[in-house]
Image 1 (tube, rainbow, N blue to C red):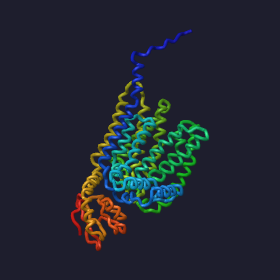
Image 2: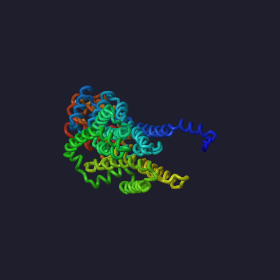
Image 3: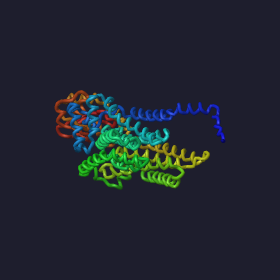
Image 4: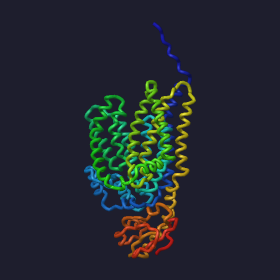
Length: 493
């Protein structure tokens, strides 16, 4: 009988393997530290924003929180139209108002929570999808250091987009895990069905941007499940969530479609504007990225017999690309194309591009240390760096200007409060510079008390009118506070 002699491990090999396992967490720790650093930098820039228009109304505690919980829950379960299905963000803003009162830092901290959770969740999704920690970090960096992100963070009324991003990331993770871990038992099927129904319905009640979770749910059994058994199990637990989400989406779409703000814009103009917000360089650069991804996908298909891992990664990429395509279409008819509309589409696009390029990288031959593997790595790193530098160099001035105006405006609040107290029976309006954008956000309110409660000088009459920002004096019966280019009070008329 032949005796097979087992080779002795090289000296130190076992210790090296053990040491490698011991430090496996280090790339993730470094990646999360980078994400935390970006989040901290953004917080330092925007964490002290005065409550701006719309948000300043949502945070006023008008009914007890227990009453509002019942009302909001009823809205969700009855598919009621709440500002085009924005139930969750509006409720969270009210929670901030109940918890923080007029403490501006506290208010901003509470509404920053979904941004933090969405960012960490996106990192987790990328890692669960088997992207390296460095690539997952790059995906989150592209998401956070972007014009849509700065647009979202410079105005608290974008709560809807923040929650839609969190809901989308949560559904990506939950649907993926369902495809892996659902078992053909009553308890497993029931538990997953209930959980996914609640999650899906909550996602639909953040903003239309999160409606991409419906096609994601429909295609999960086809693209995420690894075999027939997983596909059947996943379809069973997603059947009821899909029906519920579809009913909600159809109900809300019929209502929202009547609003010219939603469908009154040009598709061509919006496509150019929205793509430019999301991608430095606009449509031309986006087209190059799509061609690059198509080439990577084609190469994976060509090498599919040799690279099953690449094929699997490409399937996940195709799943996320569905969300990207529909996410780009949702705001395509909006009357005013704003950068924050691309907050959720950019998150999914960054993930989809990373997955596609990663699939192409995995399909490359692994024999030796081929130069093109290094070239592919360098190219991906260069692409990410180009994106971040492009954003930071010329895309964020408008939004950082809001932060600068906020600082000087808050310095002038005591003087504004004094003027309010000196004219207790007057209606107050503001004259703001016409050449500086977004000044209206600081002083426009539906009820003047929503502004003056932050100065402590609100008057009974402030409950009867709203403050507005104009560019001139002369409104009969109204005291106009003039604000200069730094949003400081410079006089009255």
